[in-house]
Image 1 (cartoon, one colour):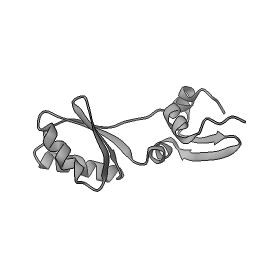
Image 2: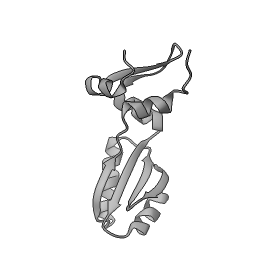
Image 3: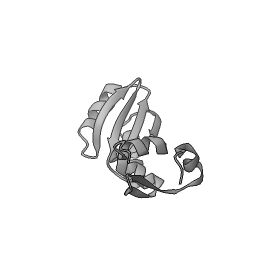
Image 4: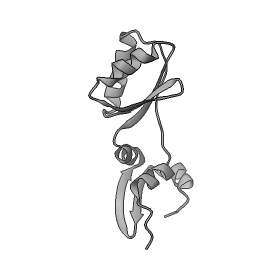
Length: 121
């Protein structure tokens, strides 16, 4: 038990999040992370054709919340890891020159604040 979430993240692979005596989430950190944000946040950067990439991704049913962040597209991807690998293969096959393709990693503190309501006993 700790309120220092950065330390917990270094030593735990399973967590339980409790607020006002109620267990709100419990399980592997990666599973709780995906449940808390309802999908994987994926960031994609290409050498060129950014507008084409945006159009390509907008029509996919497994992509939600597409937004431009600097020179990257960020989206919520609703599939699991095999489907994510498939998306990268499809982008390359479609001729996009992918420079980076990464899932955003949120820390335990982000997860905690997303799941809880900030209530105190």
